[in-house]
Length: 415
Image (tube, rainbow, N blue to C red; front, top):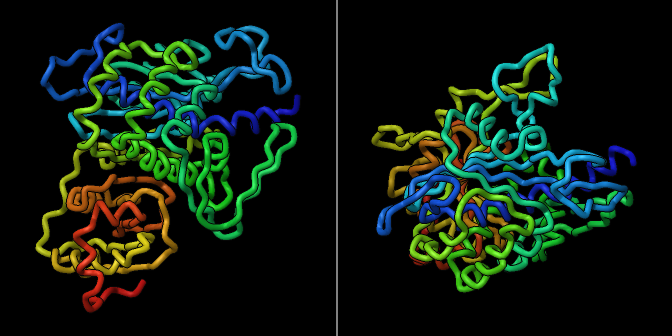
């Protein structure tokens, strides 16, 4: 079978794996589960733990034919790598998610050893979840309390149970046709509501989002939208589907009964996303972690002490209610003197604060607006700039801005 065909099949899996794993992982651990992982939180105490979440490929024994035994290690067309990796750190209602690129090197690079064997995504196949856990600890310097590993056959059920995915297709549309992988996926520009199978395809397409880093950043936005639905009655109704994956496409070393403790924390979840910063290792495609930058985006960064905020704020108003103008006025009152507003078609994507490297300023804005904060490598913001996307959910979440939307427009900086 051509390697391109295998790559196409694997491409269908990665985003959905990350969604299912993040959803299940957060649910399983919000109280601290005890069990084989050794974690535990007394009743009434806030949870504090770190969990590794990995998306595992389905293994194929023949062309486009999955193996009947998904745990077998012999006679495989290609080994089950874990190309989707996230480290989730929970401190009470605060949930921080660190995406780890699949090509990240584990420890110092050895030029005399196989480069692929040194990548973090190979450790699950070579040593199981324990080896993968140790590798992530080496890369991040964080202790991992437990792991959740999911297969793609669990994914679409979770997306469908959460109500699908609302997306905005960029100009030029999307077309992904790969007969060898059984893919025929086309979407016109504009707003779409996707069911589970199409949602997985949409979030694997590079067109419109650039490289793998751009795709990771786009996935963060989608995960934010879907995890937010856990707070709704639809989200609570999805819990049996999510929990039903244990032992059927989900591998974990913690107690799923902790799921019942989720509800008290749903309304207070504070989500932040970041991508592990790396540098290319000369002479290879492997990536070396940048520990200095990691501390900047993953640690607790206080906002710069200044009477007048110096960061530029770029608002993309897709609320459909002109809330961008109201938010610009409110930020002006708070001392933000460099604010621009760009109107966009109404979108049901989740409202978020996003940045590249200005994490402390983004944290301050996210806290003020009670919105998720996303950090990434390919978001459309420059140095000294933070972006705010207002979706239609802002009509309820930021309803207090509505009266300001009819006031005279304040002066804003022209990009």
